[in-house]
Image (tube, helix red, strand yellow):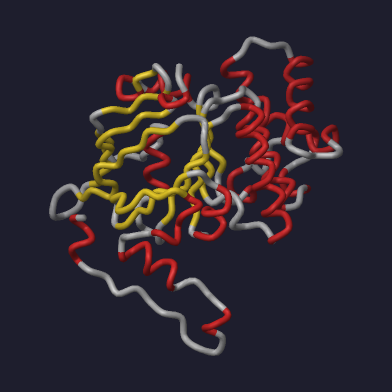
Length: 280
């Protein structure tokens, strides 16, 4: 498998029923990526998170997912049934959710949550599962992995809980990780530590990463490429280091709304929307 074929999507559409017929919340999404860092940005409701869930087969009923192509390596995701998806999630692809307080099971110890993927996908005894979990906790920068392994989620700080979630996603060495606002619940210092950790993992483990965020400057600094979504469509694709060269008025509008010293004491600009953007 070449880097270019890690994830290949064409024509991804997600729709839900309404009183007036099915409504598409993601429309004709396309992405071809290798072992790189892709950022997906846009306002709340632009379709970022539901796109991520569609890639992992997690669109809830009565949602419907269609596509011309969805390949993870040489695996045709469109051909998977429920059992097939369970074989993919965790082992080959995983998702880091927004807030560990709501994403970790509050009545399960951290160690049991990390080793759950191993119990599902690999035939290992309890001692080996524990050894692997301790090693991955160390790999994500936890200084006292034995304590964290035995802890419950409420006993961890936000940053520690986020590292534990990352460890749970990495335990089976997936090829693709989708991180949905993984730092929004963290303070600035911990956020930078988590981003550095994700960056190191992409580099050292050869993982492809999709990062979903509202934070344009952070994504521009961290990612390789950026997809800008508006009303379920990709309206612009950019080299992350050249975000200032954006052409689409929606992307320019998002950047213009960012707080800047020049706006001190003034109301921030707001977006002026054009109906034509939906067909762009």
